[in-house]
Image (cartoon, rainbow, N blue to C red; front, top):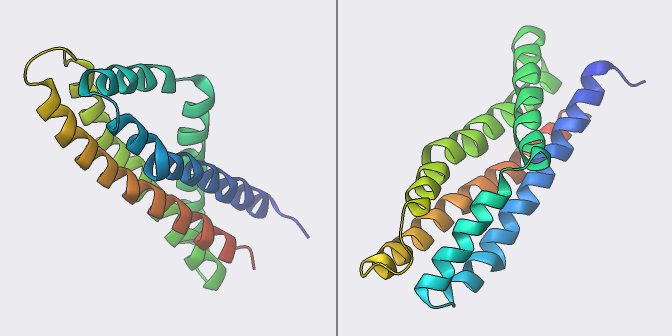
Length: 157
């Protein structure tokens, strides 16, 4: 029988999986494609992507999933048991590995890139470093989102 916690866990697992797919796309081909462009074009394209990404739909998926995970972590801490341990681990992993990394690593890099003039003499060097570090942290977001989805799914059994 389905309970509210079960439904919230399913929704959170789906949200984690959805975000894992977004991060996967960037890690698997978007950043590589942008890096193949001349630096000023790659910078301008990523600046445009970063502006376009802040949409109600993506923010709802990203932070709605976080809100579900916060609620599930609280539930799991109070309820404690085998199922709750999976839910706690999955929710905490998403909050730290996806939301925490996004806010501490990817957003500051995006903000710095937004202030960069793509045609400035130093832009190519900044772009090279941005692509390397941003993509590394994006890999972390992708792996932790996918692992969180798996852990939350384990909490359904």
